[in-house]
Image (cartoon, rainbow, N blue to C red):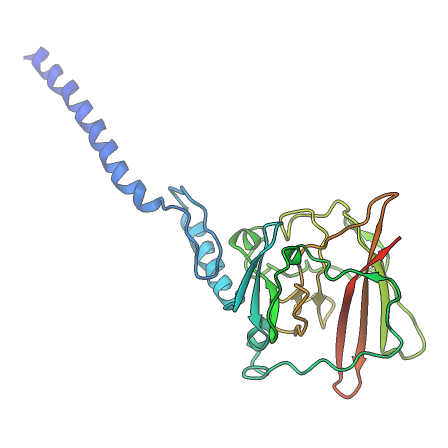
Length: 287
């Protein structure tokens, strides 16, 4: 009797193990899904069989944010560096999510100040997404599409696209970040112009995920405390140019003992509008 009881016990174990295997295989496919493209155009990760509840909640927040920030495109252009550029009607760009701008359209850009023409040889474009010859139609603006991976590199959805709060410095170095600072005192000024040489230094990939030099903007009204964001990631900066994608990679770039490439930038205040205008000219080839 003891021997038969022992045999019965061992015969149950394989059945129990087999049941676990069948039960597990019936659940995991439900949690594992192939890579799919969301409405925002962001590709989700594949073969993910288990997600903690906090991660699932974070992904839901990310996708909700992407649906808000990535607007419907009239045309989509694939950049060789992996970026996707959406040609978005100018009056539905993120700036017009602001309550005071709802239903309005961008004003025609005013005539730029006279005497600011360049004498250098100018290239037709200086961003990688235009290398194929594609361009955005009139009355649209090119916007770099934000992806799931872009947002997940930030500490949170709320902090994505925003600078860390810190004391504003007037020196050129600090916290591993080097930059140029120009300021004047005394007279009243309404604009400035500069030519910036384009290089490929070691760039932090935290925001874009690569080391390409990029043309970007950032606005703030309180020294980065609570307002502002990069590029067009929140309401505040209105784009009118259909040839420049803010945040897109710059090409070509300067090389040591080789050809040099500058980008001309100008900013001025339009007195009758009380607004500041930023103008980017094409890359100047300096021989």
